[in-house]
Length: 341
Image (cartoon, rainbow, N blue to C red; front, side, top):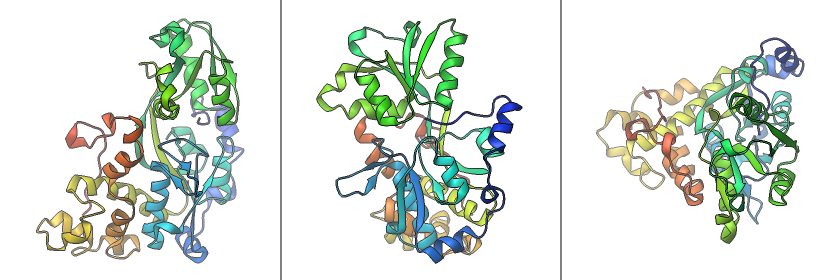
């Protein structure tokens, strides 16, 4: 689901650089522009359960949508001022480069190529993921190593495509990719039997399987992870103030979980004697001032969307995706925030 990483620093670099726009290379004051507009425009996936899915009311729900609202709260003081719009795999980077969106929060992998050649900044890994495969249980396949000669449904021009080709080659196996740009059409192709397996991020596969309801047990997500897929929010390079705000909003969500601050109790922490809590809520220090924000900016974020753990349990927990690597560092996971001091 993600355009190619910069693995060959020659021809691929030229291809990437050809789409970099002046907006990517030299960005104006993004925070001022967002405030003048009165909304932060944030691009998400059209429909991936747990990450961003529109409800019957049109409101997007999912971890990526919540990150949109968290950043909007930091910049504008109001989560509802996040204007969340669907983006396609092929157009998402162009929309960000051109300024059509301010933030890309769309199950997007952080790679060297994207950051170095596309004029983007990734603000922090909000989901540690890896690429996997899903098959119909009726095939009787228990391992991806049994997919020799299989047809694999994927989206074109993505790290998914490259990872699969590299992995099959390394295993001495062959496969035939069935490349379809539209994500809904890829899924239809898989469910209709046009391909033997569907390959994308393992969390996306788990969400898709869950979404089949009573038929979920007819599908199996195979155990192999064939790549590292650190998913991250991205913004344009060139405005370090906005970059700092977006990055530290992510870290604030992690820090709040570590400190035990939740949407329900953060307002009650004024009496805390913990100096880290006092700095977090803006009662001491000048962290908000350093970012050009109000002293209680982090409190507003947590009240709006909860801490990282709350976001996870609200969006990814119900579809059966365990925290695993995404647990906090002191709980055996990889999620870690620098000290807010």
